[in-house]
Length: 233
Image (cartoon, rainbow, N blue to C red; front, side):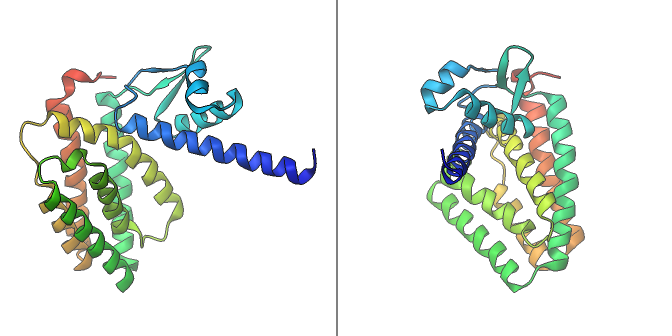
C-alpha cells in the first residue's frame, strides 16, 4: 500500500471514530442510552459497521469526556448519573463559565454583541413556536447551546472553551432530568434574556452572578426532584 493510501486510510479511520463518538454522545446525553448501560462491541459493530479498533478509539474519546466508563476486562458502559457527579460537574461548570463570560465581556466587540443578541432571538422564536415542549425540542436544544456558546465566544481561550464544551455535553443528561421531573415550569426565557442584557451592557458582575445561578438552579432541581432515579455516588 502506498504512503498516500496509508495516510488516507488513517484519516478515514480517525474521521469514522469521531463520527461514531458523535453519534454515541448524542444517544447518551438524550437518554437513548441509559446510565450504566453496557456498550457491547458486537452490538456496536452491527450498528456502526466499524472495526474493533475504530470502536475502541470512539469509546476512548467518550471516556475522556466522562460520558463512558471503561470496565476492567468487561469493556465499556455508559457513565452513571449520580449526585456526587452532579455536584462536582456543577462546581467545575460554574468556575469555567464565570471566567469565560467575564473574559468575553472584557474582550467582546460589536460582532460578539450581535452574536449574543441574534442567538437569543433565534432561541426565543423557537420557544414561541413550541411553548409547551421546547425543553425537549431538538431545534431548541441546538439554539440553546448556540446562545450559551455565543456568550463566551469572545473569551479568547480555546483551551477553556474546549473543556467547557465537554462539560456542557455531560450536563445535558442532568438538564434532561431537571426538565422531566421538576413540577413547575422554569422561566428559562427570562433567565436567558437577563443574561443577554447583562452581557451586552458590559455588567460583568451581574452576568457572572446570573450564569452561576442559572447553572446551580438546574443542579438544585435535579437533586430535589430526581434524586430517586439517580445514585448518590
